Image (cartoon, rainbow, N blue to C red; front, side, top):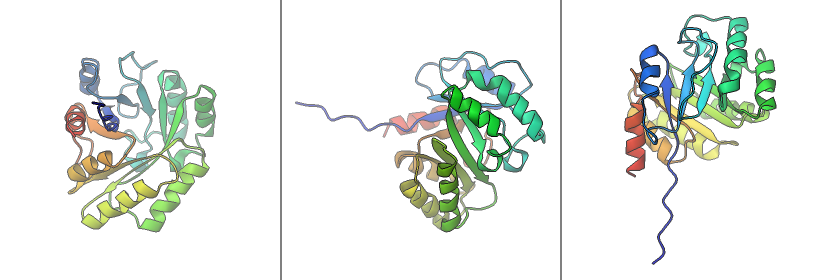
Length: 220
């Protein structure tokens, strides 16, 4: 009897945003997560990202979208430049694509995939605004559009689910807040291409431990 193909499990990303998270990340056994994210704005400056059995996503988050340290565009550019060679994926906010155009070009030159991201810690924008953001990411040449918004009502979750299903390019969609836990599992099961979890402590309300999220998705 022919076996049915197992459904593809949406990738899980473990966030490395502290020394404790890095120590945990480097001890993870194979299969615990799919990627690790290097949050350079949260970590002590270092010349390179350490080797890992998991591929790295690099970001230096903008202060207005949750970034730590109130880093200037020039300092963020320096950090991206120094760390980019170790990254398989680089995450740059939509608002930063113009000021970091040189980093975008360098990423393309080394065939590093580009995530164009947007974070709203107060609300989920209206459907038209969500659509415009996804189109901006597409027009900028991003490989993935990542969006994380506050989800306090079922209508917020529905808006993000509609975006996930209609996005003009692959989307990583996450909820924060009251409905964050349930919505993140739902979005991952519906095809969110990157799904983030913590390794040391949560970054935002409604975020799963990365290893637990991977287990839940693998269990079906």
